Length: 222
Length: 275
Ligand SMILES: Nc1ncnc2c1ncn2[C@@H]1O[C@H](COP(=O)(O)OP(=O)(O)O)[C@@H](O)[C@H]1O
Ligand SMILES: [Mg+2]
Image (cartoon, rainbow over all chains, first blue to last red):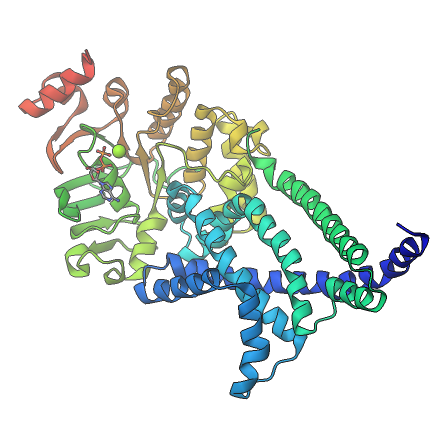
C-alpha cells in the first residue's frame, strides 16, 4: 500500500468512528431496547392460554423471521410513502430493526421462560404471588440468565445489520465508508477499514457479554 | 412462630374439612372422592402408592390445582377475626375463574406447602427466600419479618447460611429452608409433600426431627410420606390413599400394625419388604 493510502485510512478513521458513535451504536441500542420490550410482549402472548393472542404473536414472528431484513427496511422507507406514509430515514431504520429484533428475541425469551422449572411457578404461587408477580420476581430473573448468551448474539447481529441502514440514507459507519471510498476511489482500503471497526465493536460486545454472564452467574453452581 | 392455639381443645371444630373432592386430568380421574378432616393441632399422614393422587390432594389444598367437585373448608388462625372459608368446587365447574379469586387467595394464605424437591428460588439468598412471601406478598414490615426469619433460620441451625444461595446448601439444608419459608408465611395449615424422599439417607433425620418438633408445638399438618416409622410417631391419624379414594384411615399405631383392607396390607408389605 502506498503512503497516500495509509494517509487516507488515517484521515477517514475519524469520520468512520464518528459514523459508529452517532449512527451505528445509537441505532443498535435504540432498536435493541425497543425490540426487547416488543419481544417480551410477544413471548408472553405466545405463552398465553388465549389461543388468538398466541396466534397473532406466532404469525408476527413467522413473518419477521421469514422475510429479509433488507426487504422489511425497504417496505417501510420506500414502500409506505406510496400509501401516503412518509417516515424519515432514522425512524424508519429504528422501526424496521425493532420489529426484526422483536421477532427473533421473542423466541429466545419464550424458550428461556419455558426453561424455568415448573416448581418455581408453584413455589411462587404457594407463597401467595399472583401470576404477574411470579413472572416478574421469580421467573423472569431466572429466564434472564438463560437468555443472555442468545440475546447477545442477537445484539451482535443487529450491530452488523445496521449497515443496511446506509441503503435508506442513514449516516452511519458504513455509509461514511462508502462516501469516502466513492470520493477517493479506494474501495478496498475503506471497506476493510469499515470491516475492522465492526469487528472491534463486536469484540467489545462479546467481552461485555462475558462480564454480564459472570454477574448473573453468582447464584449458579460452577 | 407457632400457631396461636398451642393447646388444641378436643371440642374445637375441624381446622380442615374436605368433602367429596374430585379431580380429573382429561380422562384420568385422579381423585374420585376424598374426604378428610384435620382438627387444630393434629397431624394427618397420607400414605399410598405412587400415582394414587396424594400430591394432587395437597395441591388442591394449596389452591395450586382447582378440583372439579367437592368442598374444602378451612378455618383461620384465630377464630375471632378469621371466618372459615368454604370453596365449593362443583359450583366452579373445575375452572379457575369459577372460584372467587378472594376465596382461593384465602385458601392459599392459610396453607403453606413444603415441596418434595424444595423448589427454593435459586436467584435469591436463603434469607430472601424466606422473606419474599411475608414482605412482598403479605406486605408486613421488613424489619419485623427479617427478625422473625432470622430467628426461624437460627432455630433450624441455618442462621449462618442467611446469605448463601440455595446451590451452596445440601439437600437437607435446602429442605429446612423450605420449611422455614413455609413457617414464615404464618399459615394455619402446613402441607408436606414427601419432604424427605429427595434426600440422601443420612440427611433425612434432621428434616424429620424438625417436623416432629413442629408437630409437638401444635402446628396442624398434612404430610405425605413413605416413612412409616415417622408417621407412626408423629401422626395423629394415618390415611391410606389408593386409586383416588381414601381406602382406610385411623390411628397410626393401630392401622400400621393391623390394616383392615387387603390393599393397605399389600402396600405396607411392599414398603416393609421391598424385595
Ligand atoms: N398436571 C397433571 N396433568 C396430568 N396428569 C397429572 C397431573 N398431575 C398429576 N397427574 C396424574 O395424576 C395421578 C396422580 O398423581 P399424584 O397426585 O402426583 O400422585 P402421587 O403423589 O400419589 O404419586 C398420576 O397418574 C399423574 O400422572
Ligand atoms: Mg407425589
